[in-house]
Image 1 (cartoon, helix red, strand yellow):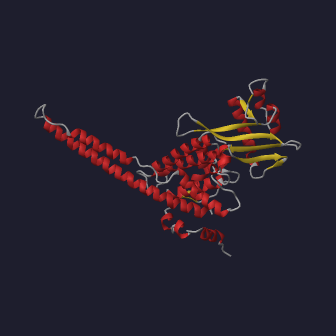
Image 2: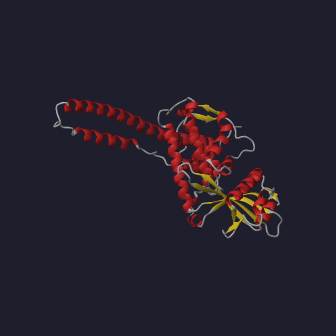
Image 3: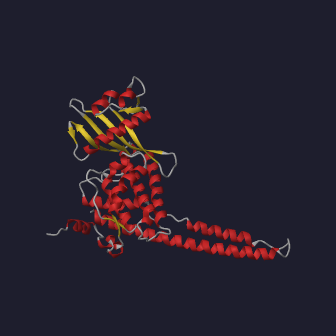
Length: 374
């Protein structure tokens, strides 16, 4: 699934970038032409003005107006939106795992308006959830950092619990387990991570919620992350994703378009990782956000002539790296340490048949995903 999805993403993104690059070249030619035209006008005006104060200078405003319209043409925007890009991977995820409800959260009207949230437990009662428990210690440390920073948490009725009194703050550093944190707060609670905005200076977006719920008659806790998706939160992340996608297009579609110089593409790689960071903190799907996010990452790298030829290191979950980092720079630094050494320059994309037209029906996609070699 991932390979075909990444190739289709790369092919469609490449078409958009090709068009944007053509616009950029046209804009540059027009700008240079406009500058030459203005130089000629200034020379002509200077020679006319030597004849006296009564000489005409009316052509100056016409030149200015003409140059303004050229600038307007240059401000083109991507023909694909960020959601169009991710929707390609969503389609493949839906077909490959038909029993999973992979849906955009804002399409779930009632759940969306009431703040539908995903639930990913690390500890459930006395059980350690195998897939997610490796993130337990780190999540506990992040929870303690937020407690020290905010001096409060929220109870299950969303009312704040003050941690600055009765010596609670001093005990945070000594907490080593769910038992310790729960005893410190005294009841079920949640707290929210945040991620610093790149698009809007000084703005913090609500990331995920770390929740601690005592399991009734059972021993143990439901220690989990839950990501709410309310309309207001959607609007904030939609704006952030829009800016992140435009940053990728701007980074690639200018002078370095089509480059096979790995170092020259550094700004493109970082822009792609930055959008991936916000995608994972956004978590806009009912299921499948992790897989979809990484497939889109691979597809966009391939569209920029970079192929990932390695594996995700053992113990690393890319979505959790994003969720547990408060800013995109930290996430970029943590991922590029293993991602970049496994990237190689590749121009094979142009040799592949068009995926969308070759596998034009759901049946053909299923057949392709079901094929195997003996």
